[in-house]
Length: 249
Image 1 (spheres, helix red, strand yellow):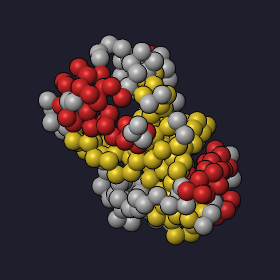
Image 2 (cartoon, helix red, strand yellow):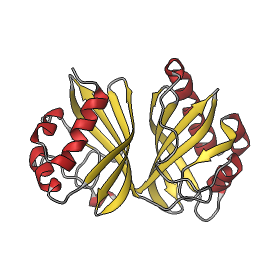
Image 3 (cartoon, one colour):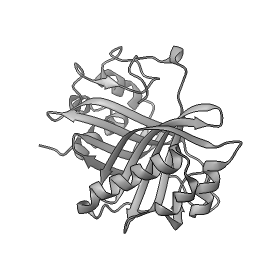
């Protein structure tokens, strides 16, 4: 049987190829869609992919991970313009039954010259998966949500490699961004923490300035500290604009 990573890639490549077989990855009878902009059950996935493929989209996988019933990926999409996405799927019996994502237009390199997708890709330290999951969750809860900024050095390496388009390298730059009065990244709740080895994805809710937002933060850890970070931030639309009733998170 294909791995969950392989199933995820087969499914999302269907957007590009229009291959009807890609739709077989999903159990449409049980599929729960958490993208608020996507109708649920209004169009079969095979028909949707056939329609999308005519626009000549491109799907590029940069990082793909697996964690228990979940597979998650860090992707680039070219749908007339470039977008960076995190895609998360939950599987049952070899089929996808639930989906979340967070998508942002690709931005120019940040002040440190890092793009939203470049950087390390090698998965290592599988035996440290749970240790790393706990540390990343601790960082988001303690520093980002509880705003104990004096503890940031307990979790983050001083020379953090930063891929957030608005933040430069280093722990001081991240701390300043979290405390910025005008566009403060205010985290209110961490909803899910997925991990494989040295990589951990934290799915969080909060506010960027006065905009209700979804934060997906991917961390790479080494020797018990966060050494690299990627992010996508997406506005959560008002409830009245949702096209399904499942919620963003």
